[in-house]
Length: 486
Image: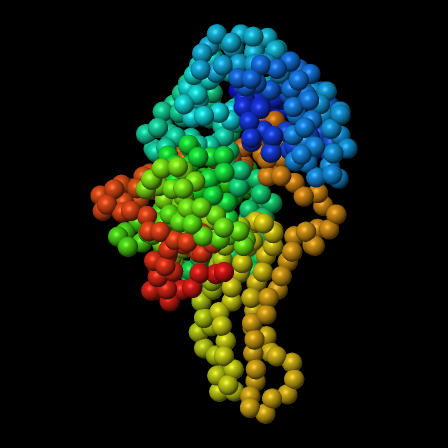
């Protein structure tokens, strides 16, 4: 008896891009695919079919793609644009009705050699799109689908979307995308923990005092007005990106680096999250201020109406298991903050006894900072003796051991996170994609926070654009003797 074929057993020879004329396609997807093709990482016969509402011929879509690539690809990666454009074709489609899917299927061709679909549409179109694909015969065993967020606005709506997708695709053919998992430094977090002997023995509550995770943005609404006002910082950032970073930081060593083992350990962390208590969250909304020396309007002014949507949230979280019991995790994210930065800060405990105090030397705890963006780096703060002679005693000072990824791997191509994810979608590797039980565990935790806000009548506190959020967010950490890393 032969074993059933799974999604990992084939590499797709066609890629179907929904939302092919949208902002994400222009800035990320088309440049990522062109970069992969230029570096020889895509099969020579891989065809890419774009689809969206706009009426275009193949030639017009190729011209559209060329302009996007010349705008968003760095000059040193534009050498293969002409060859890449030859892979592209286009079919207009109104995804809200099944009528146009037969023409799309004809354009794609029979998917018996493997078809990968990237679905980047409004959440309201997920279910009709799946129904249309199914009616047109584009959901068979040789087809896998990548789903761009948002997957719902709460647990209930997320389950509705996942149920609709599951009716047409088995779980091994569903690739839920969180683009943070495609970032090099996020993957390096796993390498740091599990490819080195020095960290894992002290990666627990016995040696770690607290952990901070910050995702800060300097931008405001930009082109995401309608989506963001319905979402807010909690749904937009915490529910997916920040909880994935938390899970990778806290997970137990998996038995192997494969999709099942890695995701099994992540979901254990998410299910260990303690419900957030009273006084353990702070929300905020920016008012007019200055960012990078330029005056910027407040959220309501940008939106054009009054709103109680939060643009900042800080949370004190706890993972209740043997490894992390008693260690607070401070999460914060917001728009119109002073700088664009994503980082994980692991603060170790003080040494149990200092032999240097009698010599007048003071020590500070070790700290590990993992920078994810804009610069990818790892910095470990250690205590060292200040060189020289001092009659009054021994002088110590914290010094960083810095690893700058661009410097350490000089000459390596700096890739867009979507390059890794699109390549894995085409080849069928789910390791860096989010499983359904992860999504649902994340929504359960976030929904409980929102329910608590509603019950308590929580309204966002104002903060000046260009600051680090409401003063209450500083107090959230400082009442535990913790200062945010800035």
